[in-house]
Amino acid sequence: MPFTLAEPCSFQETIRKSRFLTHAAPVATPEEAQAFIQSLSDLTATHNCWAWKIGTRYRFSDDGEPGGTAGRPMLTAIEGQDCDRVVVVVTRWFGGIQLGTGGLARAYGGSAAKCLQGGRRIELIPRVRCRCRCLFAELGPLRARLGEFGAAIEEERFETQGAELILAVPQSRLPELGQWLADLSRGRMQLQVLAEQAL
Image (cartoon, rainbow, N blue to C red; front, side, top):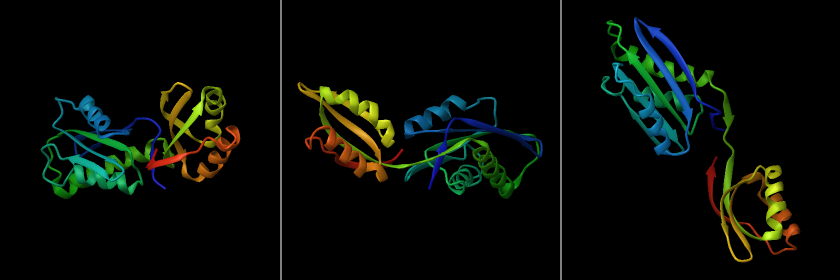
């Protein structure tokens, strides 16, 4: 089961006089990942290398280091720590001693792995996106009980008689929630599955 970070974390180490400062954070979209990278890019540093992974999508950058010595090892570290929906930025201040390609790959990959190991992690639960319609009288009880099923409202659109809701529901709790909604509405409310996603 993959994990993400509960909150941003950081790690710092010095390797042969070069300082490596690593920051990692949970992200839900590529745009969030890029914004995090931009916020941490230090113009006084020699390199600001990064990698992120969100489901099947990923990107990485060596930022001027020899090809394959920074971004790719960082992505490998993310995958090696069984992490998803995370971004890692390693900022390096060159200390005057060349590390070589193997040394660079170990430094960047190792810093990323240590940062992720030190962060507080939470398990990613596979969820299913569902749509349901409810009357206004049912909306209050529905909102009050969703947490018991590990479900959350993603979108809410009000209509003349009630609301249309888009819910994120743990796959394992789908039948239970469906039955409860049917009981609440005397069989009228049904969950329509839209797509799966890990949240």
